[in-house]
Image: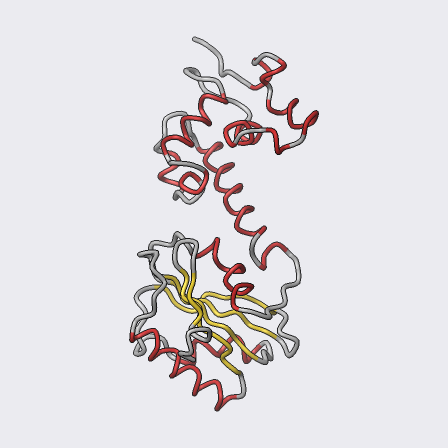
Length: 228
């Protein structure tokens, strides 16, 4: 029975770890960078070949790193260990572009708010409503999920939206929700929800600054559209 083929079994000039240290990450292909993380292949293919196949099967990093755990473990050559490595990598990629990266974020324009949630929302299979909470200097206090599922004004109650912002003494909020179709154009229901929350915010002293609709790599700001 043959042994697992590891990176160290490859010729020195083909080892991605050595190339990374000598020349920097920018010279490595996506499959080589993945190989550094996964470290070993399987009994049929070395780690470079394995990573190239994964990227090919899922049409690149976005396709691979947005898969559910069970989908990853169905792949040939991917067990629990490699699936968890890929899931951890996917989460780190999201956090680099999100508030969870640990950096302080100040929102001065809709694009900055969209950048904050885009990676975590662009590929969701259901509609999620998130609230971005801001202080008086428009610095992000927190980002929280409010609801999951099809949005309509009867289900999205101002009580759920403003509960956490009130606890955190937020001066204002931005709400964000995704369209699983990838098309961020607002529906009439989206506009109704926005107007309802805007009026509720006025009554309790927490301003609704914007409502962002997130598509696949693109967004629409209702404020920019003159709908808020």
